[in-house]
Structures are given as C-alpha cells and as structure tokens.
Image 1 (cartoon, helix red, strand yellow):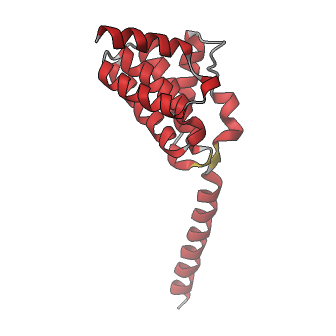
Image 2 (cartoon, rainbow, N blue to C red; image 1 turned 45 degrees about the vertical axis):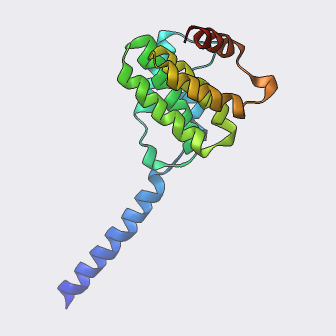
Image 3 (cartoon, rainbow, N blue to C red; image 1 turned 90 degrees about the vertical axis):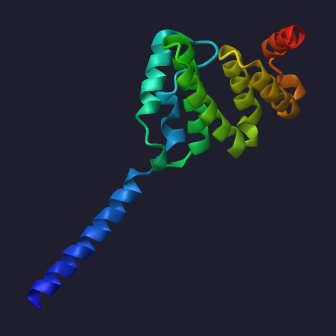
Length: 162
C-alpha cells in the first residue's frame, strides 16, 4: 500500500512538474523580436544577416504561443537574405518561401510584404513564371500607397522579355 501510494505521489508530482515546465517553455516572440531580428532595409550587412539567421534558427517555433506569424515572416526574410547573400543556396531560398507563405496565409497585415519577398526570391531563383504569379497576388493585396516601385519596375522588365 505504501509503495502504491508513493508511486502515485511520484506520478502526480511528475505530471505537475511537466505541466509547469511546459507552461514556462512557451514564449512570446514579440517580446524578444527586437533582440533577435536585426534586419531592416536601412541596415543590411553580412553581420546582421548572420546574427539574425542564427538567432531565429535556434527558436523552436512549436514553443511560440504569441507572435508566431511574425516569427514566420522574420524567419522567411532571414532565410531569404542568408540563402541569397551569404550562402547562395537555392534550398534556403525555397525554405524562405515556405515561411513567407505561412505568414501570408495567417496574416492579412503581412500578406503583401510576404508576397513582395516571395516575388524577389523567385526572381533570384530564375523562376519568372512563379514570380509573375506571386506578383499578381502582391498587386491584389498591396495598398496603392505602399507599392514597391522597384519590384514593379523589375517585373515590368521581365514581363516584356517573356
């Protein structure tokens, strides 16, 4: 009887501790975003790209309970820069598209920006048909005053040549 009671207490204790640990392991990405995501249009250099990629790569997305969409977007952008600028790796560029599509699917607010990055990524991959497809999606959701003129000009160039 004592042995059974002892085993039951240990089991209850393990369940409680596991529950507490699981609760503590969840993270609010928005609280750490500024410290792990240092990329901006104004400051792009290899140190920032590598730092941001390494920081975001260490985050277990299953442990994010707040800010998951923002993580998908930030990680997609980091993979884009790291794959294109640092590694010249098409697999990383495709992985960036995967995360950017997740952010576009889950957030109307990030949809146009995600499609913008996806178009650039397909241009770098020389897949102009997919770039054109996502450019149309981009145009359908971007606000008129937020359009990326560089992207529009480059897509006009590719439209004329194809």
